[in-house]
Image (cartoon, rainbow, N blue to C red; front, side, top):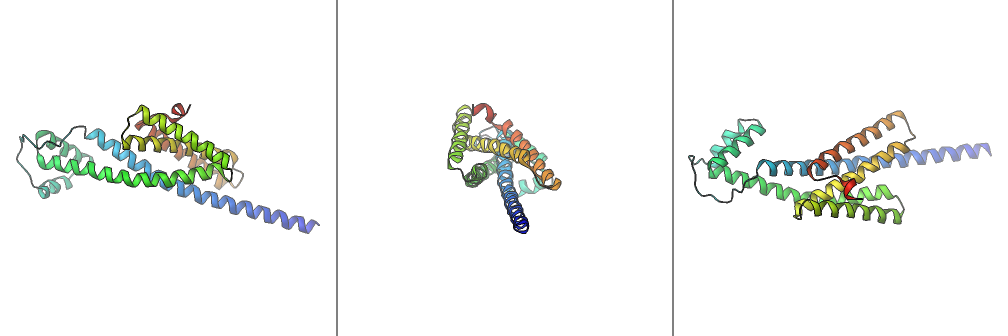
Length: 223
């Protein structure tokens, strides 16, 4: 009897460890997706702030025209931030080539946002599955809470597709931050695993803070 009980306990512990390792793998997968979303939203927002003007009108130039090759060669010699600043100064001064390059940057960002939309859909599914486990009711409740936060944030910060996408990213980061904090509270494995989970929660918190600065506070929107 004692032998059977020992075998049962060992099998139960092995199953728990296997389940925990699978959960850690899912955590890494979620973090990869959310980091990609975070980077794309942050870059797009920063670029939009740096390029507040409408350069669609190629009229009136006050600087000598440069060829695209000459402009790119000049900018390539500078650090990225300085290159962007010089590009904006040239565009403000009337350089049509610089204006065209700035438009290309914005178009590239819009293409990037299309890819982010697909990533958001995948990440949302994985995060909700991780939060709810096998409970259909829990998944529906979390999905509704997430949708409410998205709607409130998008409504208060604009109605464009990028605004809605940013609201979705912030709300998802909020839900994921809660998930990571719950995992830390439930941690009952090795110190190494606990440190990893705490680091995961800390990174999720910082990610939420970065995205919140762009759009708003999801905890307020979700109330």
